[in-house]
Image 1 (cartoon, one colour):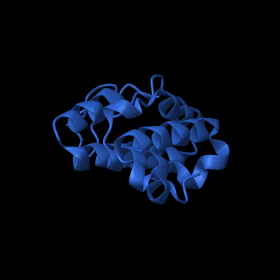
Image 2: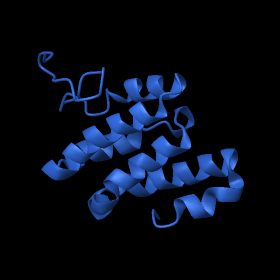
Image 3: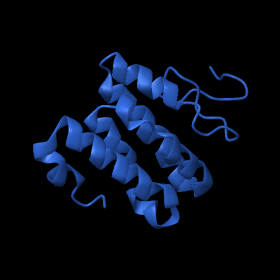
Image 4: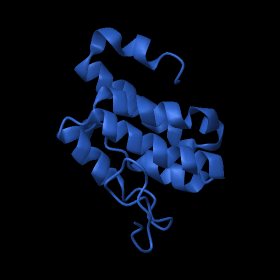
Length: 122
């Protein structure tokens, strides 16, 4: 069943993003991480952003990447944001900023693995 004007995405209990506010769905991602549902959070990230990448909706992706609060994410979900958008990173000025914030957050939470985890993303 679809919500109007938004549709629900498979495996996602939150509405898909409205194109006029492409980062509104992030609260659902943060809630899933807080509940220990990192896999569901990462799935929502991939489902949403992969669609944006495939559609070439780089403005929406930039808004999302700029809005991400890495302090509210687990490591896998943070890296998911970078992985799903990596192929388009040359079109995404906000990618480098997010990569820097992810690196800084991992340096706080898992300093011995930061270089290995970030390899290839920056």
